Image (tube, rainbow, N blue to C red):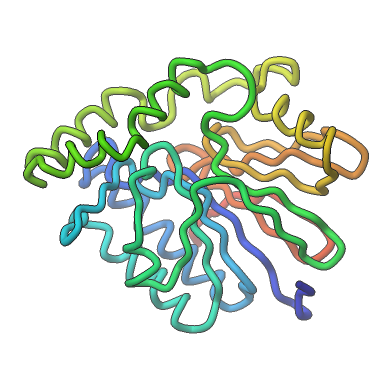
Length: 253
């Protein structure tokens, strides 16, 4: 895919809308909607790398209420012809086909590869990748098990959603202390994961969310690991102009 002149590809992750409460989340939602409104003028595509919501579960006929302005703006961008790609995170991993059917936005549950111009990308949320974090990896296997999801679906939405939202916020589902400090290349799991991926295939950019700390780190020859940060503390996003990738901070005028 070759980018037309003056077009950009945008990336954002870890908004965690709904946390810690809908009322406190609302100003962040307004800021994100304003950003979406700005980028629609030159966006060739938009990648959302997960944890857009602090909790999301799709019953067969019910989805969590709220977020109407965010969903409406995404629908507007998509209806205008801008492709949007969504990668589930660890907070919205129970996403099914609602985005695909209602918004025409494809949903991915694992990394995907893309080529833009002469640059290659590996893109994903990043949870459960790399060494360590065995407790989370075991927990994710339980949460993604079809039988567990079937059991949860039998809870009335008023009970299931309230319970899940409580557990989500209680268990650090928005940025915690460990997200504040860069741990070093030998301890950052996604950096180690990126270096391992490069042993078998070259990518110019390996782009993830999940970590909440914006960073761009060289991990090989013409290869960079990128973490997009979040929309809780940093309000950062990624932008690719066809030649270079930058992390930028969104400041409202």
